[in-house]
Image (cartoon, rainbow, N blue to C red; front, side):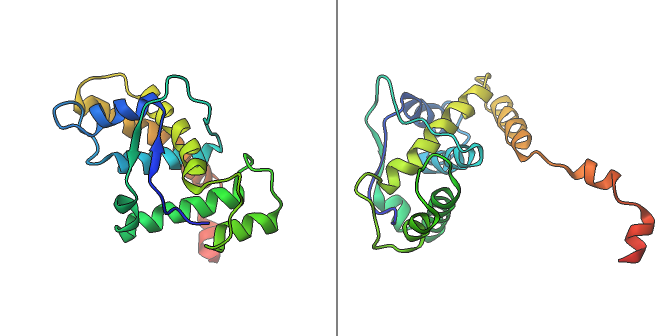
Length: 172
């Protein structure tokens, strides 16, 4: 299964993201809507949560040339798709089926499309992004996003350091 079609975005927050997050006259935090989409997908995949039922849908899309012609972007989205296909609890498939979907570009299931699957995670992520942004000031909004992204990392750095002694390091 590969992501080879336009990405349809029907959640109303995608319109807001394009108008506010990608517009230099507003917050202008991101250059392109596809950049917001990638971040939103990452949030949804990390939390393993999707939103597929949309009230008051909008008609927004990211053209296939945007993500297919840019190899870095294509690789990131394909990696995210593979990761989600293998690990997500939102799919009720056995591991063999998941692996075929993730790594065989010619294999597909009628009830599952790559862009709809990823967009479910992105819909969840875009809601979390807008939950984190309260300010209309670009600098403050950027700081709010940074703090939100930092909270997602769940770093255990301090906990790990507490458990390592100089004696243990000397043994290494």
